[in-house]
Image 1: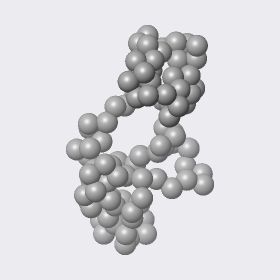
Image 2: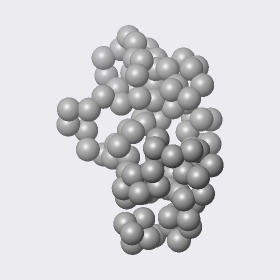
Image 3: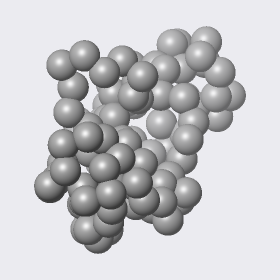
Length: 101
C-alpha cells in the first residue's frame, strides 16, 4: 500500500498507488482493496488500493470458501494445468456448499 500526504481519508492531497498497474492516483479516484475480502471490518487493518479502471476489471465474486477450495485443489502442490482443472471442477457450481466439498 502506498499512501502519501493528507491525513484525512479522501483528502484531496492524498495519493495512493494502484497495486494492479502501479499508477499513482488521488485517493478519491481509487478503491480500497482488502485481500481478505472484508473491507468493512476496519480494525487493525491497512488497505491496498486499486485505481477505478483496474477495480472495474476485478472479479467481484464472493471469496467465501476460496481458501478451502484452493487447498482442496492442491494449489502450489500440483502442476498448474492439473490445479486449474481441479479448481474449475470445484467451483463449477459456484455455491458456498459446492466450495465446501
